[in-house]
Amino acid sequence: MEIYGDNQQRAEGVQHTLYTCQGTCSKAIEVTAKDGIIEDVTFYGGCNGNTKGISQLVRGMKVDDVIAKLKGTTCGARPTSCPDQLTRALEEMKMRK
Image (tube, rainbow, N blue to C red; front, side, top):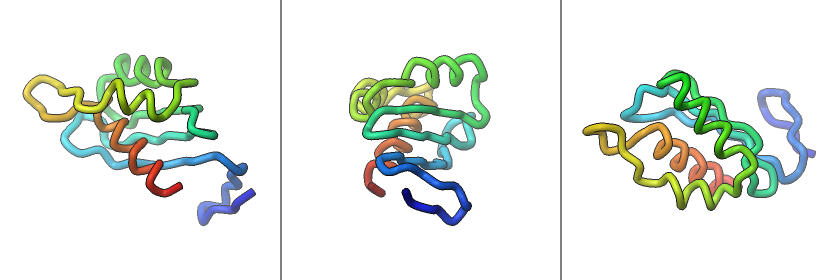
């Protein structure tokens, strides 16, 4: 078990990130995964119902499957979206393994 600077203990195999969004209504996304499976996703800001729906849909999915399905999703004229930002958060989390 590792102890993190925020005094939270994380079991082995658990990854956690707080990602700052860019170009979306959501300001940040908090993600927890264990052994490559998403356990929890919380969006801060954004369209409340949509971000809650995304969070529920991806819970229990493999990180790589979520990236494959949602990467590149746009929102209106924006080149990104909340789902696309989630994939960026997941990619960043994977890199810090």
